[in-house]
Image 1: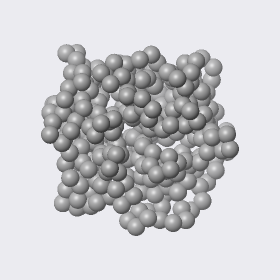
Image 2: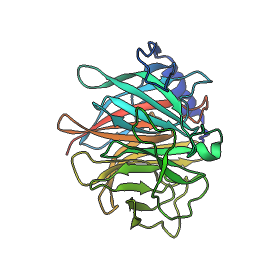
Image 3: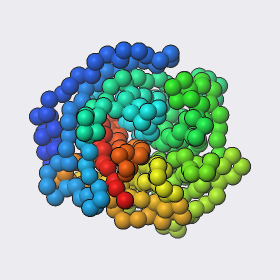
Image 4: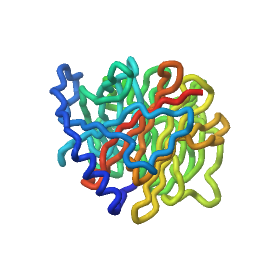
Length: 326
């Protein structure tokens, strides 16, 4: 997680987006037990001004929205995203310690046009008590195992906990294996994903990739001698390739005062990163992108990326879609 301080380019984009009409979401019709409905609105967004977004030849923009929230909404600071159910449902987590669920809305062409059914619930500690402290609730990554269990990674108090079924998480999670690394306080396990053979892959924000099983974590690539900083492209999101042996990776860079960028790339099984598939930067649409979900879609792969607004009026909660073909 990083709080971004922006310059005039950011405020120009905010002003442009404010011109789009906000659609207020209807009340959630059927709440699941233990969940609370969350109010929000949406407005459409595109890739912004020319010269910002750069897409590889095999990538197509497939729609985008801003999730518009009031100041007290529990939906601020969303840190990751994974798809559930029929691939229209999604589960997210905030670095304030809330679990969020909803559904994607696509038009007849399959483009992202909105979300609905937003609900949230508080994450809990091992004894079942609700999380109340930032040190315990700074959730940054999540994954769904092949067995349907929800794993959540936390930083500050670095750990991975298993909450069971995403729709009905158990109140007393169980600890799961995570890398035996001394992560910096605010640079932890930002990217986690279910693997391809029962393991789960973990990436550290300042470097390092591991494949973990209940018995141990195996190092895929070690933390570099000179760890990555905010001024480098660092991994903030991860999800497995639904049709191949590798993973898709979301990276973020921030250089003061106003250079904010995001990259989407492919990660091979051995941790090697491929060419940049998508670059987002000013004067185009960009933000603090941290969440990534990948799903098979019409013969290729649909990638969704989600930004963490840090509960700041100068940032936005953006959800963008991209289609990748091989």
